[in-house]
Length: 126
Image 1 (spheres, rainbow, N blue to C red):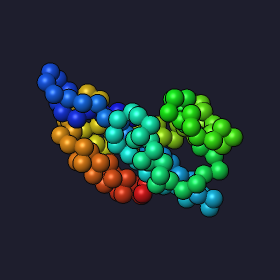
Image 2 (cartoon, one colour):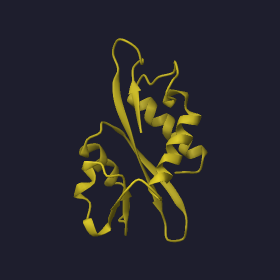
Image 3 (cartoon, rainbow, N blue to C red):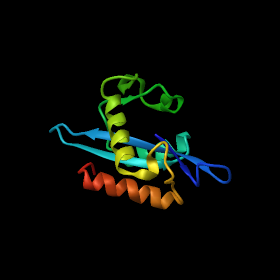
Image 4 (cartoon, rainbow, N blue to C red):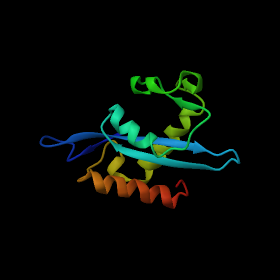
């Protein structure tokens, strides 16, 4: 999911990406972790370092996922990958700063991270 730092009109603004991971435990518990940054592999790796070892990784077919173990990585746009879209929808619904057409915007990366964390805590996702 992406958003902007700075106003979405003429002037200074920068796109940022919000990487989300849904971790499903063997006992059925589910929780979310996220990282905010650019769309590079470095941002993904900061998130990946915090995640537990997984029996299977599911993602879309974006190129940075190419380094994941081939025998444990399923790439596609359906099923479990769509759960992330549900998380993104909930964040956009609860945070005006993430809505697509709004006067609200993110002034700082730290505030964006903190806002996402608060929504996730309130929803019982982390």
